[in-house]
Length: 182
Image 1 (cartoon, rainbow, N blue to C red):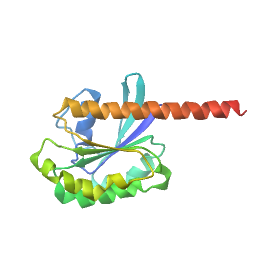
Image 2 (image 1 turned 60 degrees about the vertical axis):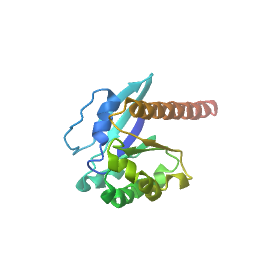
Image 3 (image 1 turned 45 degrees about the vertical axis):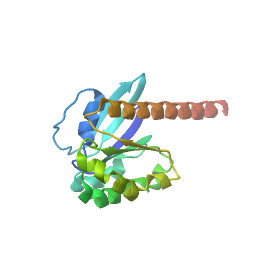
């Protein structure tokens, strides 16, 4: 698929598909659970990208690795209100983030559902468990998100667009260098 590939992942009920619908501008606060990869093309500020929305149920997670190849951006969604699933989320997150083929791929990490009171109470714990500030092999963009805030949706969109533009510049430089060396 042409364009930039963004791999959207997280546990079931984290709010991935709902957040994606708000990013697209077609809000659906009650989507059906995702049971297969949902690939969505978006163009924002003349930047084209494809978001691969991964199903989060345990029996579909084995398909993640085969579908995340050639991703330019990783987008992880954590339901910050669900403290009981932080360890499970961390285990699944580590399986992807530690893949050697993804070294250097930028990560956007959404501490999601921040409109729920328990999310605010759990945020520090989530930050400690995921320890994002210690990641040295990639750029990391942590965000507090909620579908109830246009500001948080726009912040996420802005980061995606900046990363897509940067990725396009890197690809152009590589093509130019390759062309000039022939």
